[in-house]
Image (cartoon, rainbow, N blue to C red; front, top):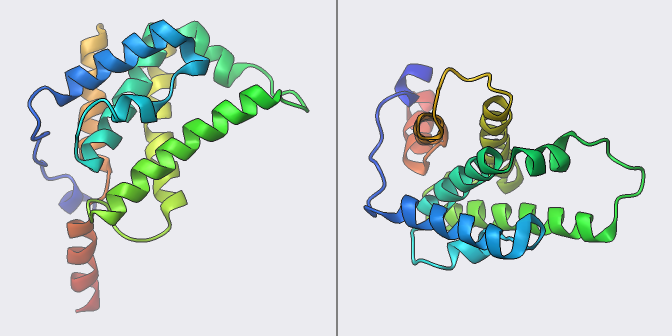
Length: 175
């Protein structure tokens, strides 16, 4: 089953979508800072397919960690206070809500399988978060940001299940 999922997938069908949205994300972070930045804002800059938006949001997350490792560390490595500020909690909820909306949009367009949206959202987040953590800790065998992002693109393309794959797997399992 795992080998069946490892086949190559089609690349983005929007030639410069990834580059454009990454630049937009970086520009927005520079303008409003990480607390004021939202993935929803980046995604609305272009008229991309939901799955493309989800992939680019994941790459923007990793790019943010690479460009601002100190911010990334503060966000995820600092001890969690018993009472987090309402601003931080609100920002975290908004960011996760945006990711949840991206995944739901993919499911609605049948680009991701139907099912527990929260589980698919956690899959997407943990995948890119793991790459970001390994990259900022210099635990990946790549010398450049471009190498890390190329690897991240590969992981995202190979790991996100598609609705078509799920239907094929279910029909095979039923036999």
